[in-house]
Image 1 (cartoon, rainbow, N blue to C red):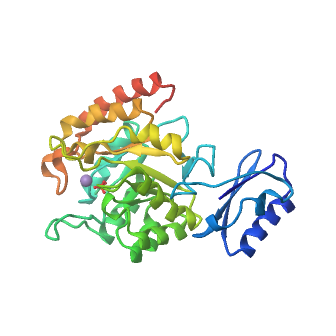
Image 2 (cartoon, helix red, strand yellow):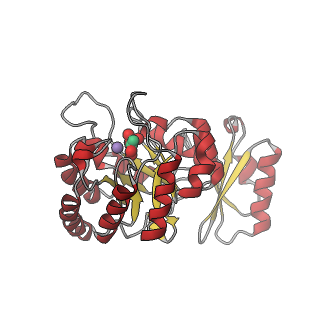
Length: 338
Ligand code: PEP
Ligand code: MN
C-alpha cells in the first residue's frame, strides 16, 4: 500500500502514518521527494487492511494499493528517477556512463593496460571479475582475493571506480572493501541471501537480469536490496534465453522502455554477454543507447585472443575506440551525452 502525503505535510503527520502502520505490524519505507513524501506500507497482509485506516489521517492526500509484486522499485512508490552516485559518477542522470574492462582480472599487466586504455577513451567505471560464476566447475573461477587486490591497485593508480562481481553472501564485506560497485551476476539474481547481505551493506550494486527471469521477477529481486535500505540499485539488462541461438542470449531491448515506465531505477545494458561475439557488440550497444539505457557494461581486453574468459565477445581497445565515437553521436541524438 502507498500513502501519498499532501504537499507540505508536516513531519508529525508523516510520523503518525508511520506509527499507525507499525502498530498494525507493517514495515514502512519513506520516499522523501522534493515536494512530497510517499510512505510505502509493507507486509504480506496489507490487503486485509482498509485503505481508510490511513486515508483518515491528517496530511494524507491519497492511499493506493500497489498490485505488483514489487513495491519499492516501482514508480508508484517513487515517481522521480533514481540517480546512483558512485564516487561522483552519477548513473541515471543525463550523462550516459560507460563501464568497460575485461571479463576477468587475469594479471596486473592486463588490468592496468585495460584500465588506462578504456578510461582514456571515455569509460568512467572499470569492470573486471575477481570471482567468476562459471557454468562449469572446471572453468577458470577468477583470481579471487588476488584479483581484488589488483583491482584496488589499479583503482588507486588510474583513479577509476571499480565494478566487480560478488557471488557469495559471505564475501560481501570483503568485496565491498575493494569495489565501488558490487555486481550481482545473472546466475545470482535470485540468490536472496546474497541480495539481503548486499542490501545491508548499502553499497552501490548492479543487479543483472537472470537468464530466464521476467522483468517483474527482476524488479522483485531489486526489492530485496531496497527493502534493506540500499537505494543504490542499478539494473542491468544482459539478454535472456529464448529459442534463438544465433547470439549467446537475446537482448530484450523492450525491457528498457518497460523498466523506465514501471520503475524509478537506472538501467544499463551489457551488450557483450548478450552478443557472445565481438562483432555483434557494437550494434547492440548502439541500440541500447538509442533505446534509453543509462549506461553500458562492455567487455574490453587488450588481447582478446589470450583472454582466459569470454575472449570471443571482448572488444580490443581499437574496436572500443571506434564504438565510443558512434555512441557519442547516438547519445547526442537522444538528448544525452557520454
Ligand atoms: C559478467 O559480467 O562477467 C558475467 C558473468 O555476466 P552475467 O552474469 O550477465 O552472465
Ligand atoms: Mn564475461
